[in-house]
Image 1: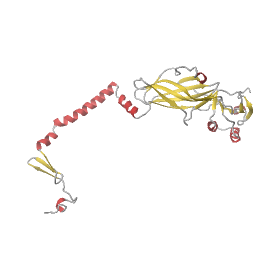
Image 2: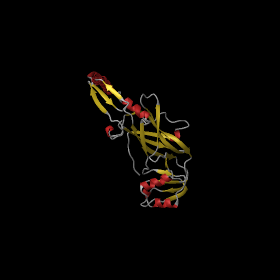
Image 3: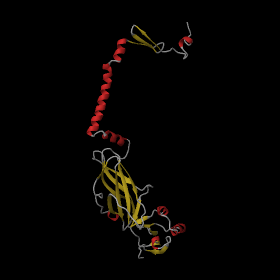
Image 4: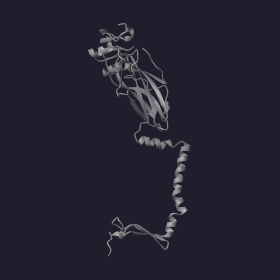
Length: 298
């Protein structure tokens, strides 16, 4: 008996696959125990036009359905459903609220000698912004926050409302008052809110002057002017919208780029220290009083 691992069996140490034809039938040998005979009739049937038509028809039908859905305008629905299942929000947004010339800011504590020295050198707006942010300063009287919203569904998402959400509240801070030097800017949608009237008697049920429909990639800009006269507030922006069939309202909450909420406050009667607007004199900020009002009239 010959050795099955010998030269006759090939270099792989096992039986090689061999094809041969006997009387019009194909014989395929995969192993010593596996022999499959395919008749000529079966081979012709597998390659027949009728068999090819059986698997081509479903493909053509599927393509026709996709074309019909696109023509009817219903094809975005499965795409939107996929975005829903993937957890992609139907609306995204960013809010920008920068310190503006003419703003007055209040801090809970007075500035340190090093911080006062920085003010005295007439810092740039970025330096002043960082200093105020380190103290979590609140704008006195009013502030502006600009939201840029973007739809993320093929079918339009309807923005029902944009409004502030109060996170915390307390008496106005009495540390330092800093007045920034003077300027401004316009936008598409403007909302004015008095947080002192938000609760307990409740503010308006709706602030946005009209609903906004956003399709995929479309933008809307909302400028929110927030006022406070009696108390200090920490707040973020709430966007109420309806996606898809619109049977359920969704909410998106927006904060600044650093993740921090916004802060606005009414004026305190007195501040431990008051620093003046550098535009009134030709040098940097200087301390103009202690234990006094921040009102320019004193």
